[in-house]
Length: 252
Image (tube, rainbow, N blue to C red):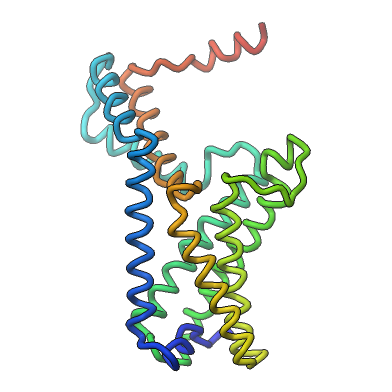
């Protein structure tokens, strides 16, 4: 299982080009879905207005070096999920985030660099399995224990809403990816292999095509919002209460 290239089995029935085209289509689905989400919610217009307001109210202009430093701070904060104060939510998101990066990267390498090779370098298959497992662990932890409506509102862990589309489709996608790989190597049952492959493709397609209706696009919005907040705080145009004022309000 840890040296197997699961995508090589697809070439028994389809050209290697089929999975490569599928990945390109999913990338386009994310781009188009994000643009539709931006248009529908007016995010681009909001940010443009916010930046114009910030420049007009700025008490001092920022140099290129300062702006670059703020961008690095934003990336560093996103890299450790710094927006989450409680460690369980932060750890679950880190597992999903880094697992997703590892899983997607190795998937692309396996499909484009080893399209029909049944046996590949162990490091690639191992990282592919590790990435999927990290997503599954972080996703299940978040879904059953850490969602706001479950942890604080007392809803059943099995209660589903539109906001859960992203995490549910992500969990299902990697779960069936692992089952598909297992069916090929340990179970060696053709029917089980193709059933799990079909479910894997279905939930993966749902994950990427469902961008306009899920929280997928938030991974692009959050860093932009965090960066703009840092810029406004640095140039003096922020309209948010200072920490001292917030503390005063809480104590009062």
